[in-house]
Length: 290
Image (tube, helix red, strand yellow):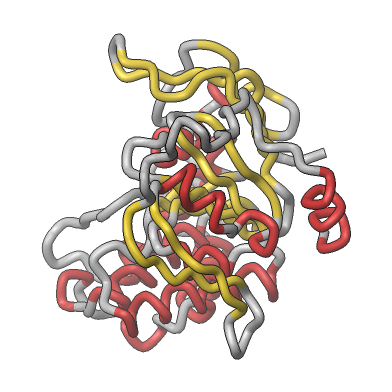
């Protein structure tokens, strides 16, 4: 059974419903990428999984228990989130930032324990930030700063990491730096990672599980080689694109050409369903690749 899943989850901002009756299971020990156009509900779902947003109906379950009914500190020992564009107080050093990840494990306002310091040292080492530990966070490059925040999440000692657009506003080199780190954490430490990603080629290359959303509904779900199709791109993103295998990795590579044309009345159109599309050959492919 998946450690993290949703059951009939409905989410709203005021009177505006964003997600309706979502059923989603996050594969343990894998990288899952949520993709979709702006406003499709990706970040909203992630916020609900992190207890930042309370459901209108249904719920998010962590280890079979409703996450919104569990004590905050208990949730924080199992799940860490890196929000979009996090900020820190001016002058805060990298080590001080990473030490905040130990808060769920502390009692009162006591000093850091030997175990806390061990975890901080490990998180700095795992992210390649040890040599930057005494440097102010606001003096770092974009990629270094993002790695510092990931180190803080790692210091929590959780098996599940939620990341909301971890490469936003980073140049190409820093994007690769962050994505390679996440891949390493997943492969070497079996971390379960759920991330919202805008770059479809990053999603297809680094994730083992893709969830394509439109209007708060899962239209496609499964291995990138199955989900990343021209049909999915038309339905979810309204673009025309070719999909070719990456010459180095074999992962599906998206080559967009323009906006999709509106279908004529004679052109059959598949109607959306309340869940992910079910196509037998695709299901067989997912099972074969799982």
